[in-house]
Length: 403
Image (cartoon, rainbow, N blue to C red; front, side, top):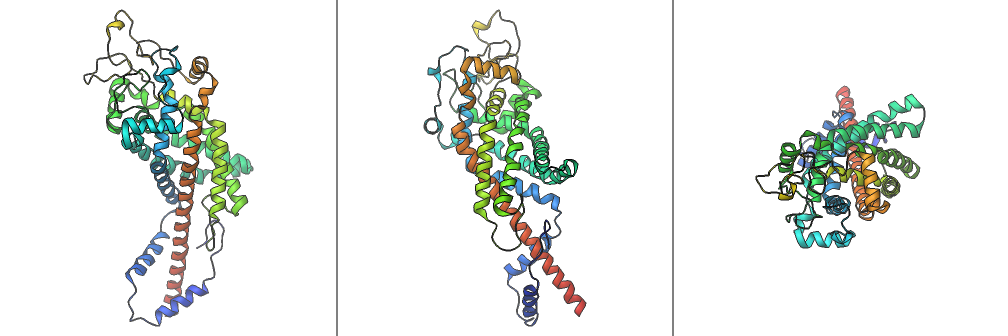
């Protein structure tokens, strides 16, 4: 079978192998070989449209499992400034400092379970995220190339389109993941911990909907869409570097010979470093918006300290409204991307926009490499199965005509 314009290897060897099998008809084939043959033939019937989302979803799941602890540390570093009870509270209340210090604190307080908070929605989110993203990217890049005539513009537009589709579809899942990762398994007692306690994904979704409404699931959507600049840099640069180093585009591999895995790894590493460094501040904005509750104060029968969710004696006489991050019923501290940026800059300085960037790079680079290497490996294996299946079907047809 030919894929992406590449020719199939010499079929004479395969024909010779087939003749050898025909000369010994009484020797039963090994079950594994029979299964492999059926799998090869079946793979040729799979529409190409389904291959990219399947490989992308599998790659995302592998990446999520490997890097979840680092994502928890990064999320806590990004979010903790939004839980302060007052805008002028001193920095001595900061719980998490640096990657190793934060990791030790989470391990000491919450154990292994604390390092894997949010793994469920992370995996649930990666399945549609990468399935939608890589499917749309694979289908639209040639379309945009026909429209623009520019290789870079077509890849950039395809990245943004694919990213917008996957972001809108999966934003509620990522909000739940961020809420779970930012909380502590201990009750809020220091004023810098997340003021909620969720037992799991469905518990978080239920409480968010009941207390904050449907809008809470799309908190941080604007900076998340702004984050499309990340993929607009990463994927065109990755494909360019991969073509320069290996001679093949994303998802493309030779039918025979080496796939140049070192070149794929280098392309992934460089593209991810560049994209993450340039676009990191939007992640802090998104995290602050996602971890801010939107609710009119109401009594919680579970006595859980949701921000603004409990009435206190010192709240008497205050007018109702959306609760802010200090637990008071007033205008929220963060309201919109621009105002959030201005508030953080005024209260905490510009350095906070790079809070957790070391952890992010330490997490994002292996995550990207796990994702892309898994994706490329699965694409290669499926292409190989389809190639062998096509040759097998061709030999069977030729054998049928010769009888």
